[in-house]
Image (cartoon, rainbow, N blue to C red; front, side, top):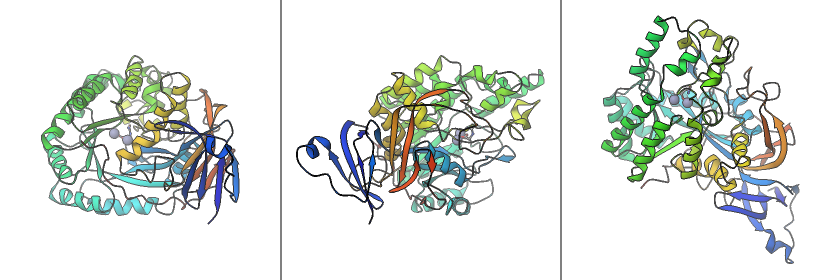
Length: 468
Ligand code: URP
Ligand code: ZN
Ligand code: ZN
């Protein structure tokens, strides 16, 4: 079994920092050796290879629990495949994704799961798991939820938005939540009031408002707040764990915080785009705003401070990307002249760790909190801990060596996602991934990709480890 010693770095965990060397044997972490001890006479362990991490952070690999590779949506497909998307993730220090299998209406959950395995298996550069999108609630679907749990998929996303596509009624949501609750599985909610939004969209189009900014103006934050409160109430009645995905609005955060204060099993994530981008980006001229169309929409800037604060108080526990890239050319352009036809989704899987580190640089997050929201909590929330999300003996050797002093400029010209624009074009970042290991294998090293499609393995997941 080959061994690697990562020496001289600062191990950052959710609990703090430690000057320590990390010994990797095969696919696992064999030991974390605090340097105080090794420097007082004990010889450093011999290893086949030594990586010098002096001046760098040594982190558990990032875990992005919300991605959409090759997702059928809006009459097209998101443009990153499992191969290109997981490669881009590794460039940015993410070593696990949890992607969404999408049940089409009239199809079974198990057939859907098989279909998603056939897209991902043998193609991923890093490890991966699945959530299941439930868009057709019926007796068979409800029964099959248990079979999904048996197959390692125990989180089910439902939509209060997109009537006629993914939308579920309150009654259907309640039934699915009751079913999930019997096994302790989590329902993930896209919480926007789609019925009301559709009326606002029709009114805007009838008034001749076709520009991308109307995507934001017809999905007001109040309708995210209302849907979030309704989801929380339904989850309470069903006694079901609830995880609000891609939370963007202060009103929704207030509802989550209130529920958590009462001890309900309610959790929420936000995404970098809601921390850094705003309605002003959706209003960029010459259809440029279409690059920023995602749902929920980017909000007015003043929501951002609330989201950073929610990350500090743990009312927001996770940062994921909702990576769902569509090219500008032939993708976003489908909505020229009608904002409601712009495919919803933004690219981001490559930049989550860097953008959150920028939050550390700006004093919004501590170093340990960075690791917690980007790796440790996602692992616990989605049943992967302690295999993932921590640098500890026995855990998978998913390790990122991060240079906090490096500088980079984000750009479509240099990113590795399969998409023709960057939502962060020109943004200057302090910090950069130097090396990414996935189960002991070097995938990225000093600007070189050394991974391989098919190295990534499917991860059957356990239950949410935060349930009260
Ligand atoms: O606009 C978005 N968020 N696209 C991806 C699908 C979803 O709702 O997460
Ligand atoms: Zn969604
Ligand atoms: Zn999504």
